[in-house]
Amino acid sequence: MAYVAPGKKDNYEEKVETKIHRIRITLTSRNVANLEKVCNDLITRAKDKQLKVKGPVRLPTKVLRITTRKTPCGEGSKTWDRYELKIHKRLIDLHSPSEIVKQITSISIEPGVEVEVTIQQ
Image (cartoon, rainbow, N blue to C red):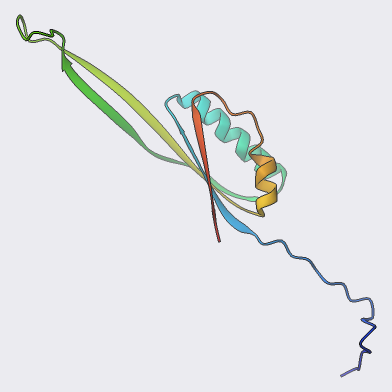
């Protein structure tokens, strides 16, 4: 074992490691086309930065239904209106430092698409 003087380090370089986080991006929208466009943009930007990407995972669509009578007074024939609201959801998992995620998510997001970013250790 060689002795190294306290002032000299023989050109040893200290590596500064950036902590890699698991980042989950949740996209929610009523419009599938806008949702898929934002999803593809995020994935292509992440792959350009050579990050580990999993997804998009397509979660089951939530269908909110309201059935109501057409007549306000209750008289007449019993006719009903049926309304539906479909909510689509996608998950994207990234393994990267948190600084790079800010660069990736700086894209222009389509109207009606909600983005939620959670960072796990």
